[in-house]
Image (cartoon, rainbow, N blue to C red):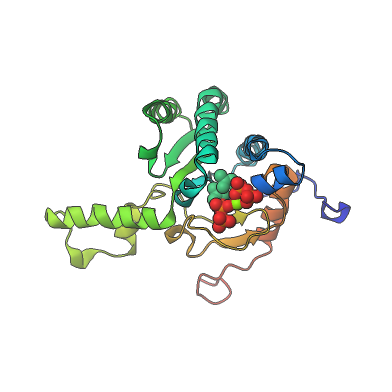
Length: 248
Ligand code: IPE
Ligand code: IPE
Ligand code: MG
């Protein structure tokens, strides 16, 4: 990073309420160093720790991290196995630290692909942390924005079939209640690292009015200073939500 980009990590005043991140670039980080992709994913976990800690420190309400997309299942089985193992290890090793830091955990996505051990670990971690009152950490694992919307549609259709919902009363609010992030504030800022300018089937419904921020930094190099740059950039935006200059 060039010195002109250097920003004090203390300069953040009011952080976005909900930040979501597509944590991309682990493979390229490793490749550029002649290391196996696994090293990139491991270093990526360190960035997760740093960013979670920093978000908790500056008072972000919700941080949603894209850990593993539904499409990532199509990678070679060796890499999928490695990512699954890493997910298991992180859940096992980090839950206590999350507890000590008053962080709540929610894992969203189709968890049926994970081993029963991992599913149990995920369930236990969420339960252990459910009474925490600090940062809401949401991990999207085997998640797809299209999957999320389809699941919501399925739930609503099932209720309609049972006569619990009148199809005519289904609106944005009713639909939102059935999506994975229903209980969280709207996503203010969506960050994607590694220079790719796409959403890759992460949050779709939820980013209708999010501010999008793309940076070239590879995820393993993304640190508190990178986050501050993203937040400062967010603060420079004029959010209008279709209105005039944000006037009410
Ligand atoms: C992001 O890094 C992590 C996951 C998708 C699980 P990548 O593995 O996509 O790294 P690049 O994009 O190939 O560099
Ligand atoms: C998106 O990154 C998924 C995660 C970061 C978890 P990908 O590397 O899978 O996305 P594409 O393939 O570049 O679109
Ligand atoms: Mg990638």
